[in-house]
Image (cartoon, rainbow over the protein chains, first blue to last red):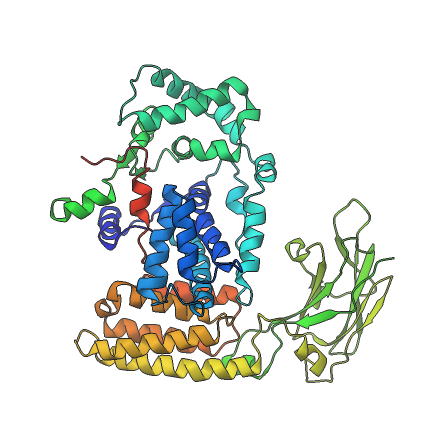
Length: 270
Length: 272
């Protein structure tokens, strides 16, 4: 949903007309890593002391260096500048930008919910994934604030979920296998993702349910996705870490090339 | 004593002239009672006058520490109305739903601490001047409806022209007109739920000049969707449904690329 046209076409060709499934946990990951940050940019643009789109972009470029914030800036450039022809130095275009961005947020969220078929499996009972994003056309920021209040209330969300049960009981054997295997691997570009995840899992195993949190869940998300994937389905992924995570538990999977590879070699890939 | 604000709204989806035109299914009248305090009285009730003239009394009780428990007194008929589901009960509002086909008027909202007199609604007219003034922002006003029709006409006209020239270099002239008309709509009516549909189609066409890739039949289908939903009193949910319909006919309303930044932190994506 965030790839270049050629990359989307690649997946369309790869997956064909068959239904693509998604769990609400993966939807939550999309909300956490992307949508939540886009809403933060919306809030930044709303600030009274931010007069223009350029002010908000400058603030983010200067203060925030994460890959997530850079992804938001990439979106902002394409959405507000290239597509809607808004002037980044015009104070009159600030409100137009809020409308455009707000509309994108609710549209993306709705599309995330409706494009894929729900895999109907979420053993984690992730409460964060169920926080609604209300659409109030007359006051979009109100809906975003309601979403933020629920989504960021990680104590409440954690109190409702069963991630500890997933890791420490339901998939205990699989998690133990991950940790045991990790001890035999040397850290390299190929294994670092898997090893980072197993370090977190090992900490949870040692400390128990208290070590589980939404923040921790963000670091072990790939493992949770692999563990909770229906075994009769194939997990489509790009990240290497899924190779170990899936192979060890006999979860069917396929690693796809990254976008940059597809864009570099479109003829060979397609 | 609970201090209930002297304010209540009888709201949304009245069978108005506009609904009659679009043949919308019968809608519900929603009565929202606002409180400026979170401690609600143990009992509150709404009275609805049935068309047949019988008086209906709805009561909800909430003993402290328990959930709201809707109940009906006298000879209640359950098909007339109901209390809102718990999801509609925020800390400062309580909502009653009534089916407009069944009732003639909402006569009163009663609280132990304060009786809020409702508005008598004459037979055949399901809203009063007071209630029209209290319409929530989600239900657009008549001036807004007129503005929507006006600006939507410009958008439709521009899309018709673009459709006729689709696939041809002359389409560029009309694509420009489409974008101008859509941006005027967006900037003039940012609070209209219909703007969600306009913005979605705009972004699908404008991003990287993708207007040049769509064919005439697709433009006609998009036009039909705009006309269909443009004549309705849209709820936000329905507006998003229309956006989904735009997607279904092949328009990518979220075409933007933001993945390259994610790839840089990806836990080892395969570059080989």
